Image (cartoon, rainbow, N blue to C red):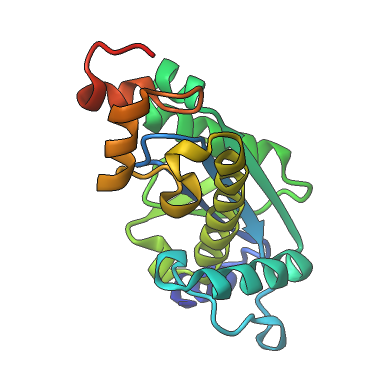
Amino acid sequence: MFNYENELLIEGNKLIAGMDEAGRGPLAGPVVCAIVIMPLEKDKIIEGVNDSKKLTPKMREMLYDKILSTALAYDIEIISNKVIDDINILNATKNGMLNCINNISITPDIVLIDAVKLNSKIKTLSIIKGDEKSYSIACASILAKVYRDRLMLEMDNKFPQYMFAKHKGYGTQKHIELLRKFGKCEIHRDTFIKHFIGGDDR
């Protein structure tokens, strides 16, 4: 997972950031973007870091805390379902990522991004399946995923009828059944759910 980082270090890039998002596909809730600059010395590498989708929730939670305590700098941005409906999910994700770059406390030399191509004041490199190929992106993916999951647990308390704690807003069969039964709530994405509830504007 260090091929990209090692090559960039050789080229003279001292501060390498990874960036990823969580929540592009769900029917409800925000998209969360995270950027992180991790130390890359061998004795500071966190064991077990991988694509967040390949980790158990318990492992992600443990790594989340380790990443935050080890990171040189990080930033996490939340883009609401309302913004997603207004400007579409790709533009919402790009806005969140640009906010991450603008708000991180240390300016990186380069930002490695999972799949998304971004025009930024900082040099960026888009890597397909980057969360599997780059340690820095994998760390960012864990931050974004855990942060968003925690938000959806809060939403489960607010809207228990939708069982957000179970599916985190993704379009599971159960979530779709509940959406058809209860109609939408304030965190559902109108542009994502119209296929399931048609003209019902509840």
